[in-house]
Length: 372
Image 1 (cartoon, rainbow, N blue to C red):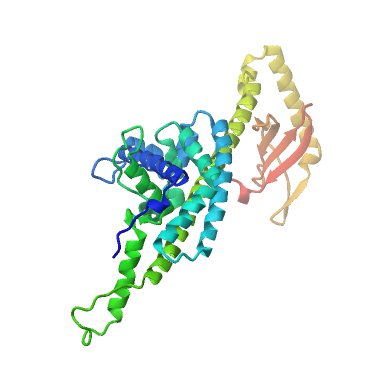
Image 2 (cartoon, one colour):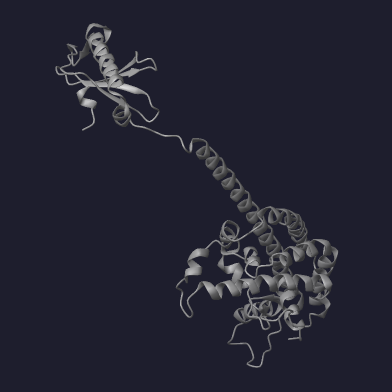
């Protein structure tokens, strides 16, 4: 098997992709170190706060300027959408060699340097060390795709990545390259070789027979995997940015709703709600006598008017009889009712009073429908 050289892949644009992925992985590793108890799967208090939704945790609990974040997210989203759409067209290429495959990836990155620069600027503007994790979450990527692009990195504590780490990160991003920190070309080479081995008749095959996978077959399969994974990477970044945008807008809606509720409460703050019993206790004796006289008059009127009409119930007419003055009750809207129970049929009768104390509505509940 030939030695793999990836020098043909590297340029300013591809190395910026390496820096982007490096910042994302550094953020992910830092957060995961804080969210899990060492050598266990138990969550720390911090891990319980984050849960399984890093985007929601950051936007709803930690971001101090969601308006600015929304602005730069929209700009980065346009760039990611372009990279996603253009990377999907890479599969139309048919490289004749592994080097040619690397060249197509480098040309893709160089051609879309402005979009890559926009993503790079976005990640660098996320100043909090855990903020870039929003671009690499289980909510969007899922566990398998995250594992495919994860790496153990040396130099995470330093300000700048060592050159060899940046190169490896660029290879992982463009996935030409590397998947689970292993070259795709080599895994494909082994896969094709194993298929040839399985097709051999071991009884007639010489023991010193050398299996040599066809280079064109290996390159063709490698290119198909590489191009598909490259498009997937930018698709997941695009979806992550879109979810960040959605959560910011949800947060703004909740803030507007909370502000409207506070405004409504501010209007009614200080209003004194007084019950009927309390109101009566604070009345003067003359006012209480006046109300009692009015209630007695309404009671006398009630016994003579249409509200004492015959009501059919269970096939038998009932002339509702009251053995005592009705109770006065008020609902949550402050509307008063005269409530009594018929001594003959057991119906519960409620008479609604208007602002002048006149009856303007009647509600009758038969015994079978009365609440216990």
